[in-house]
Length: 329
Image (cartoon, rainbow, N blue to C red; front, side, top):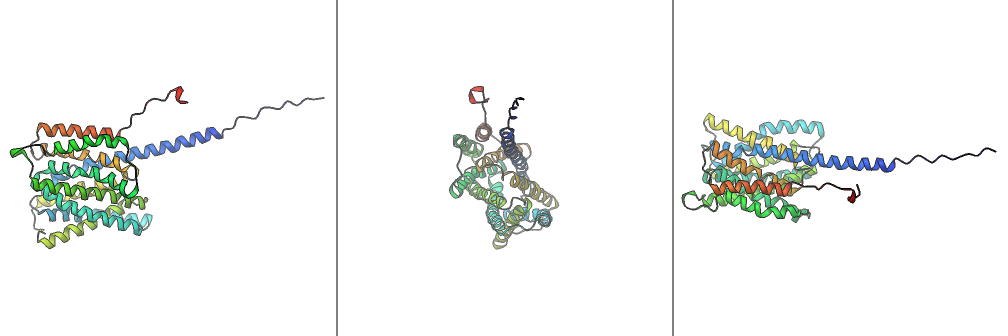
């Protein structure tokens, strides 16, 4: 009589495959966040050039500069948006409405921002508009119930202190910034934060479209700024060739390139992180103001730059402790 010895069944590979799939998804999310943060940082570097270009185009009125910044940008954005529409279909109605609303905030921001640059200086103004770092996550908390991480709240005092110091708000006498310019810059920053938040929502409604939301928002901002220039009688198109050159640079480096990058990056990055990364702009703007425009900077303002960089690190960088065998690995 032959005895059949049963062989043990091979171990199932299902748990192993599930583990690999889970790790792949986590890795994809991490890569998406990192890519988004890199895109935002590159966009911020481009935006940092815009106050220099605006200051060099001071021959134009503030509303003219705001209008031409957006109008010239549309020369590039419109063909790109049409090509994108042919490839991926029309932008949805909700996304278009949100982009137009974002553009209204952007138009208000640009009119006030350029005027503040002329009055208070490029570096000071660009720092003060970064009250947007408060506006973006707080709007997300209010309208979407998006939680704000504890690290953001821990970094908030550093952020506020950095903005105050870089803005020269503790300076006295001849070194004190113009109060009217400070107010315009702060109100501009609130509108700026609303623009970033609403544009992010528009991008989320149209994940396959990158150029479309930026183009609709830029066209809307051009109408707002141009309308204001006409109503106030400030529209001036008879400008020197050098001024036109700086306005073209402002349109490309201040509107087209950065907002395509920031619009792409902000889709995969939390609102609080977007706001914190945008704080790199004032530091670079102050440095460019010193190097290019010869704007003075005090010791307190240098300290503010250091605090701002530290705040960005606290709000955005994650420090992970190594997992040990006691953690189950």
